[in-house]
Image (cartoon, rainbow, N blue to C red; front, side):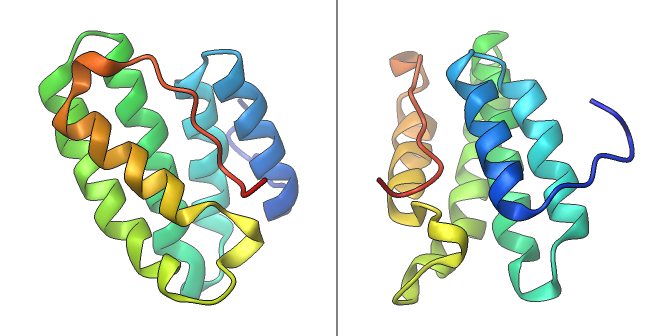
Length: 120
């Protein structure tokens, strides 16, 4: 991923989802991290949390269950407040992601996971 990656939120979500679907969570993390750094202040923690979920899955894939648990729990905490709105930003499936992140943090042996970033 280029260091100067810059894409609109909808495009970042599509690209990150493609990478997650291809079991490339670290690359999805890079896309989500770029979106986090470019996001307006009210959305920054959401994008930061999404990036943390992707890197948490990366830790699971690499056998670092303890690191994954910490990141996934932190990510869920960051993302959860965005589910309190009628319409989460960019149709992100906040509740579903929080549920999956917490489940993986509690039971990392249950990986692999098919994470969906946006609501159907």
